[in-house]
Image: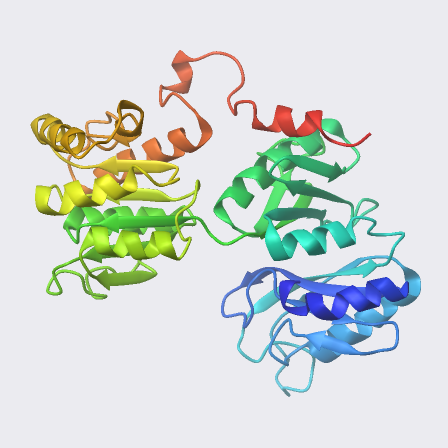
Length: 379
C-alpha cells in the first residue's frame, strides 16, 4: 500500500469508496511479493500493480465489484491455460489477492495508518479466510492496537504475532484456530508490516560469520557483513548477506550511525576477535542504541577487551550491554551450531527472555508484550 498511498489519501478525503487489492501470498515464480498493491477509485482510475501486468485486468474488474458491493473478496490467480489467453501468470507462479473496500465507514483508522506508514511502524492484520469475518482487521502499533477479529483469544494470538513481525519488518499470512490455536489453520490472517527490516551487522569475514549471516537472513534481518580484508569479504563467501562491505569495522559503524541506521532493533555481532578491530568498534557500538551487541572470543580475550574499553572511558553501564562471549551455552562446536546459539541469545535479548529450557520454567511462554498492548486497546 505504501507505493499507492499518495493516490489513496485524496480518494479517502473525497469520501467516496475505493478498493485496494493486495498480494497476500505467492507460490513459485510469482512476479510480485506479498504486500504489493493496486488500487481502483470510484471513478475507475487504477494505480499500482499486483503482477506486473499479467492479471491486472481481472483484478480491476474484481475491484470494481468490491466498490459496488462494499464486500471484500479473495481471489487466486495461477497459470494461464494452453492457449495463453485465459487470465493467469505466464511465469508459472500463483498469487493470492485480497481486495478490500475502503471508505470512512469501513476503515475509520485510515488517516492514522497513512500517517504512521510515513513515519512510524504499524502492522495491519486482516482475516483473509473466506467467510463471515473476511476483511476484519486489527491494527498494531508498537504501543497500542485498534480493532478486533471477534474473539479475544484469537485477537491475543494475532497481536502477539503482529508485534513480532513488526519488530522484524516482515509480511506474511499466519494461520490459527477459531480461538487463536497456532497448530490449526481454519483462519488465515494476513499481517502486513510497514517497517523496514531490522538490521544485523556481522563484523569479521570468517566461517562463523557466514553461518550467522545465513541464520540472520532466515530470521528476517537485513544482514550486512563487514571486514577490512578484501580477500575475505566477498559476495561469493557470503551469498546470504544483503551487503558485503570492505571497510574497517569501526569506520563502517561510524558511517552507519551518521546515517541513523542503528536503532533499538539492530543486532551487532563482533566476530573478529582481534583487538585492533574489536576495541575501536566496541567503543562506538556500546554507545549506540543497538538492541544487541555481542562479541566472540575466549574469556581471557573478553577480560582483555573490557580492560581496554575501561581505559577508553566506557562506564560500567555501557560495558554491561556487551554479550561476551557471544551466544548461549548450547555446547556449540560447528559454525552452524554456533550461529544457532548466537541467534538464540539475540532472540532472548529482544524479548527479555531467560534462554532457559521451557521445561524448566512456569507461567506464560510468550511474556507480557501482548498484555501491555491489550491494556490500551479501545473498547
